[in-house]
Length: 122
Image 1 (cartoon, one colour):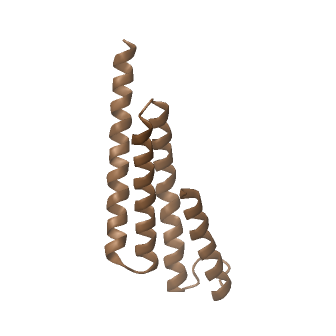
Image 2 (tube, one colour):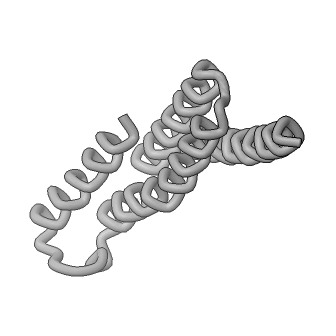
């Protein structure tokens, strides 16, 4: 689902580049600048989120924890993209909050599993 979100945001940028006849950058077009940032922001946060989710799964975390983390990341990224594209500060802030808090939760969960698995190995 996260890959499809990136594809959709990328296609939006491509479409706007064609409509605005901009080959590189944003051409000074505010709508294109916003679309580029929505795509860029997704490509900045989604990879680290996926890495944390994979590490959590490999650590033996319960599937429900991994899935809920993935759903939270997806929700945060959708909310943020919607906020950027519709210029709704409310959705943008909420999307970032969900994303950041999920990243923090995933990082701590990975640390907890690393400690737990390390102690179990003793």
